[in-house]
Image (cartoon, rainbow, N blue to C red):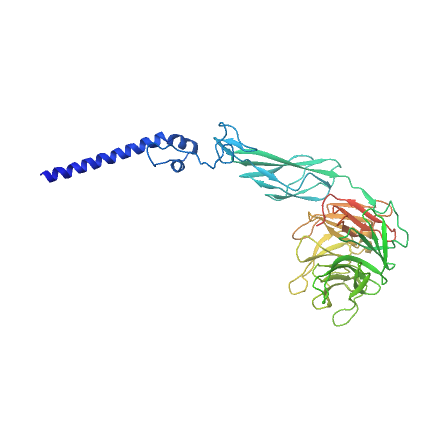
Length: 469
């Protein structure tokens, strides 16, 4: 009996101790601020992670690395936070942030303007606040905004991002001001003599701050950024289109910068090196024999290959640098006159009579079937022949038609044909031809397009507000 009483007694004592420990733990949680933790977090599990159970007398403590007033830490004096942080339910939280390189823009009407704003927010949306009615194309951080062609110069389109983060609401505004189109002769202050500029047939900019113009009379002219004539380089053979590019030589590791020139009379493509005044013939016949024909435009791809046209034979020709041969790429475009790369990778944009075509470049070195990209005039009227194409950062195409003294703006479309959004005609005596359109580069403003005007011996230009593509 005594043994049984002792066992029962030990059981009672153990049970009593267990209840005592449980009661002590409960009191410890109350003393350590458990109820306050639950009210601030709204989650008992979170509150539990801030509680201490080391002893009944230890209180809940704040993370020593958390500085009051800083992000995700308690507010100073219950209301204040550092910098732009705001006090939300006794905790300092960041609101939405906006970061953009697209400051307020000034752009010609008829162009589509690309806008990128990096937003950190739980949610956000775009809207138009004021100005000529337009639409916002796209979603997220990257949008495009067409500026109405009939918008009056000086009108302002204001766009707004409304964002929410941590229940904090903020807005960010961007504006697009409509530019007045101002056409002018770049060389008007220092008109060149006949020995300094002939019948302009090509135009290009180099990395050294020079403007180069080819004259069909047989020379290249170099002008400075202020329009001053610098020098003349003899290049007989009927120079036409000219473009800067890389020339890869077998005995050199690094390519050299040259001017590729289409020689219409000589029926050849040459590379002119201004540094040593030497000219290298790149191609003078087709693979397997046969003349290149009266080549008129040239387009290097940056990797050594060069594209050019022979309009009379309906040929787009590719010089393949690795093989050292000129090969007909396609004869599917009638009378191709000018070439340009654009927003699409591995695609040539080809000007012809009254039209612009899109020609895909396939991996096997052949061309895809041409697809019509833009109608700009009567395909039976030689005066509607496209003489220049240039793209800006928004994918807008500037299409020059010298015979009609006109230029057209066409917004980019990924598939199918685009439509003309705005046209300019007869913008000024002596500089309305819009041939060989090019965006400035290097020291020349890259939001301005330049063009040649044939026998008028002028270089036209206009500020567009968008950078070269």
